Image (cartoon, rainbow, N blue to C red; front, side, top):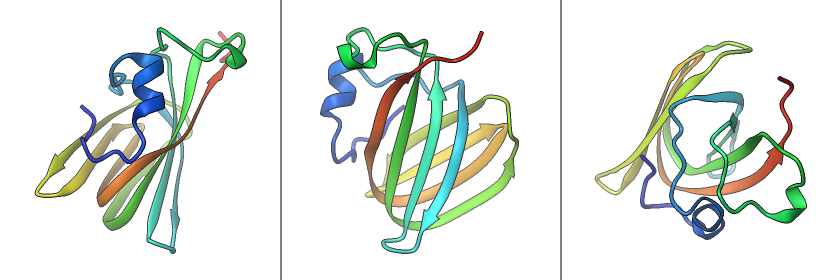
Amino acid sequence: MWPLRIENPIFLQTIYGHYPDLSSVEITSATMGRDGPIMHLSFISTVLPYRPPAKWGAFNAVSFGLEFLAVESVSLRKFQSHGSSSIRMWDDAGKILLTCDGAVRLSLTSQSMRVGGMSGVMLRQ
C-alpha cells in the first residue's frame, strides 16, 4: 500500500497505471539529511511498469528513490548487503508511516514524501 500524501505521484501512476507492489524489493541505500530532516530511501524492484519511458531502453528491474520529508522518527535495526525486504507505507493521523522488514528492518514517520527518481536498470541474471 502507498500513502495518499505523495507530492508527485503522476509519473509513477502514468507508467505503472497504479501503485506498484513493494512486497519484495532490494534496499540499496537509506540516508538521512539534516535539512528537513529528510530520509532518502533507494531500492530496486522487479515489478515492471506496463508503460515504461522509451529512454529506459532494455531493463529488467526498476530503481526507485523515495524522499521522506519532515521525518519525525526513524529506526534502523538491520541492514544486510543483499536480500529482499518488504516495504509497507500508509497514512495515519496526517502522517506517513513506513515499515520495512526482511534484509533491512527500518521504520519511520514523516509528514510527506515524494518520488525522487525512477529508472530502468538491467540486473544480472
